[in-house]
Image (cartoon, rainbow, N blue to C red; front, side, top):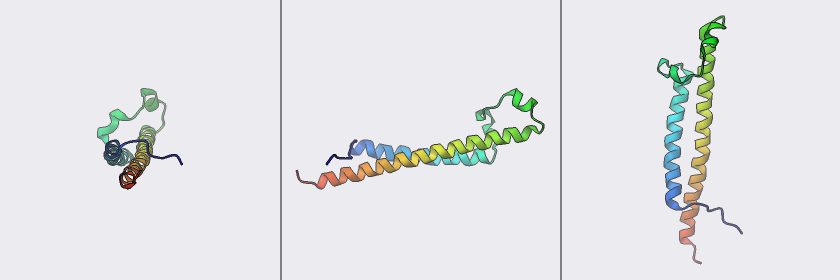
Length: 101
């Protein structure tokens, strides 16, 4: 039976730490983008045409804020998946320590 173990204990622990940090950071960024924080306006991808061609300019910018916030939440979910894989690797490494070959 093939083993699902593909990384060592240190790399798996590093993956867990990076995943926790990524989830916290991206979730907070997603919250701030969805609340339309003015500090993050530089990270919203809009052009001058978006402002000029829109009948109600704030609505177009607000929809871009929401889209970036959703992208942050999606990236946080991917980090949750990477953390789950890293946690499984830690468990498999601990189980392998107790096996007698």
